[in-house]
Image 1 (spheres, rainbow, N blue to C red):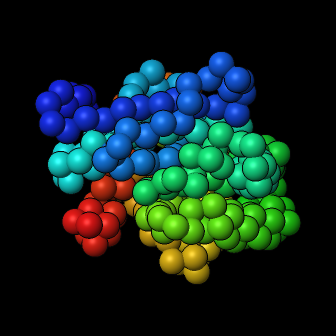
Image 2 (cartoon, rainbow, N blue to C red):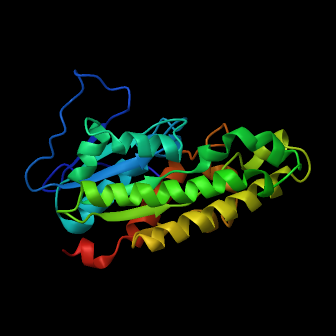
Length: 258
């Protein structure tokens, strides 16, 4: 879905930032009166392989339209980032990600899939589903708890609304997965994804954050391939638009209405 940016009273500013930014990177300056949306996560958040606006900016535009307020979006999505890497970045006092999070009104969090990257062949080859990643599942639970605690410490004054997404698949899906994985592989990836999503949802609820289900809307779509980029591993423009819509629908009305 193509969305047109608003040009009049409601403005959305997008600042794309990465861990690799240096001293020449743009300063973190949210215009007076703007709401601040900070997106934390992996390559799904960064918009890798989409060549589109990406859901953080699209969500921010939808939020601006809903609230009638300017919104500035900071996208800190980083390809390959896992939960430990995100925690390390938030723990650095000089981190631009941490500084942006400290002033956020909304935090969008998508993290966890890369925690299982080293076991893709084992899972898709049918050698295991969750039993070979018990350590990773335990570590993800602990890291998520610490990530939420860190966000709370960083942004205690504003008390941001935290929206946490699950995944439609922690590995590949659609036609690409059907072609790349042996029989039973796609089903095994979905079993692991459900386990990971359950863990992420529980961690979000424990932190009084809002969990946003991506698994059901993607997996029950008429054709999930139509929501994925050509690599089968990331959302395309339609997928990002769907994620943005789901995030807005899940945003508590008390925050939207002030």
